[in-house]
Image (cartoon, rainbow, N blue to C red; front, side, top):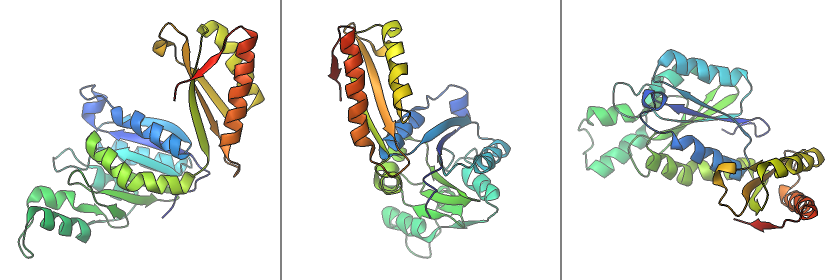
Length: 266
């Protein structure tokens, strides 16, 4: 299974605790950065509570909007409010099954003999939609899975950040690099100007280079100037790296006209 890489990517954070503000959603920012670096066109981040009807609606709406890939976190654990598997299976119009790879992994890691029942919590976490591809969790128990819902794919991962990051590094990251390779190039720079001074320059650059996005971060200013992210994304098969250099050079020329030089931050 592979998403249509010309279509956008969405991130979905599932958990009532996130919506109530009891847990900060760091997963979405982390994923958006990694997916953008891989070349994906991330267009939406959505947070929803552990309410099956809302999750089903959001998943199906993403398919209606023409989203290529939805990356979700949360709701795959053993507790009663972990309803992501059953709900996404409902949205995909499929059933659920206990995945043999996950079961074998649990037996090996817990030293549970064949024929002995798995504990109920492991039975639940080994259950996945029956049309999904399963990816084992290197830092926890609940596996991730890739599930088609019409022409949209959903890659569902657990919510704990250390598990999500480990699954991304082991599975989703390499997949994304293959799916979206060469589509995005980024660089963070700094220029010694105020926001009111730099904003017209950013607009001029983006008007000249429609594939570029430039953003100045006032909150990250340290008295020596403003950090600016420069992102170039191409979907026409042309490498964005050369254009990124052109964009930065053009912005640097504009800054020099105002008596300022740029520095590279990363």
